Image 1 (cartoon, rainbow, N blue to C red):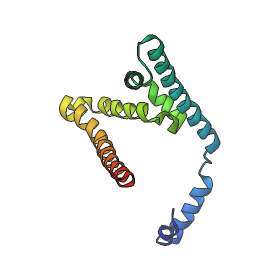
Image 2: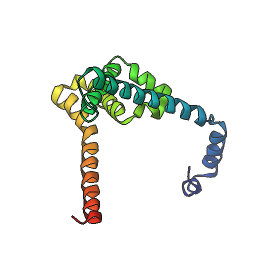
Image 3: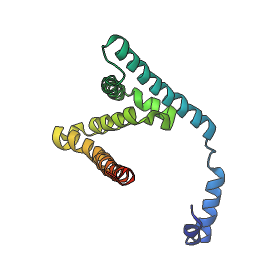
Length: 156
């Protein structure tokens, strides 16, 4: 708790905050970092393996293998989410399971599964796009500003 908020508390509340802070369990930052690194690395390695399979046996080249690889990773993430496996991976790995493609697919699928009882349009569709909307807007605005900066730097 910040010092400005701590000053607004009564002396009893301040003492309680101090006791609570002392009794708070220490977070295993190093262990959590290693877990995140391992799982994130495994997901990326899986993606690279899928891409190599697409190049070797799928008839794709390095430029065209990316899209089907991403589609397969999204599909695997959604399947694992629907069986509850991805959530367990996420609990163990923390941020490592939030590798952009699979983590976003997990978030979308989780929102759809959670709100399916409200119907397809308002429940599934509405909850998925509550999550996807800000991501799409941020991505579009970011791309605009990056393109604008590039245009100004390169001069046309």
